[in-house]
Length: 311
Ligand code: HSE
Image (cartoon, rainbow, N blue to C red; front, side, top):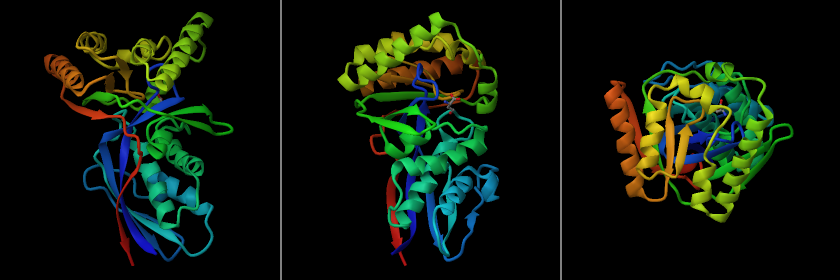
C-alpha cells in the first residue's frame, strides 16, 4: 500500500462565457503541486503554504474542508497530512480553490484504493468551494476531477456530463488586481429579462453542440454572454478593448475566466494563441497594470498523478 502521493491539480476556466455555474474546462498550466500522506489516526493536517497566507485549520482551509467531508465517508483510524505548493494564485479566477479541494480528494482517493466515484469526489470537494466563496458551485471542481469540458446539468441532485473536448489552445491573462468571487457574485442581478435568457440559452446550446460536433466556428459565435459579462466586466479595466483585440488577432472567442479578473480566449492553433496572448499583454502594459499570461491547451486528464511513494 502507498502511504504518500504527489499530484498536479490543474487550473480551470469556469462558465465558458455563457454557461454561468454550469460549464467549465481544465488547463495544463497553471497547476498546483500537492503531496498527501496517510496518517494512522482520524485527523487532517494542513502544512502552511510558504507563499500565501492560507488558513491551516482544516475546516477553514478549502482542501482541509474537502478532506474532512471525505473522511466522514470513511471508517477506521485514517487521516491525512497535506502539503500544497500553490502555483495558481488565490483570487485569480482560474480555479485556485477548486484545484486545492479537488486535488486533495483525488489524491486521498488514490491512497484509499480508489473507492469513490468521480461524482462522489465532486461532492466532497464542493465543501471546499463553500469555504472559499460561500457557494457550493461545481463548475471548477468537475473539470478539475474529470478533465476536459464538463457540464453541470444540475447541482441538486448532482448531474455531471463530461463532454468530449476539442483540442483547443487557450490564452489567459491574469491582471494583478483583486476580484473576490463573493463580491463578483454579490453584484449580479437576481432577475433577468426573458429576451436575454433566450439569447443565453441559444448560446449555451450552440456551444455544447459546437463542442460535440467539433465545429469551431459554432463554438466561436456561441461564446457570448448577455447576462453576467455586462455586469462583471466593469471590474476588469480595459476589458472591451482586450476582447476586441483578441478577436481581431484570430481568437475564436472568450471572456471572463470564472469570476475574474483573469480573461481567457480559445484559439484553433498555438500560433494564434500566442498572438492573442501578445495582444493581452499589450493592453495591460498600456494600462500600467501588472499581469501574467499563459498559453496552454484544454487539459483532457484533470488531476495528474506525479508519483506514489510506498511505505
Ligand atoms: N461560476 C462561478 C462564478 C465560478 O462565476 O461565480 C467562480 O470561480
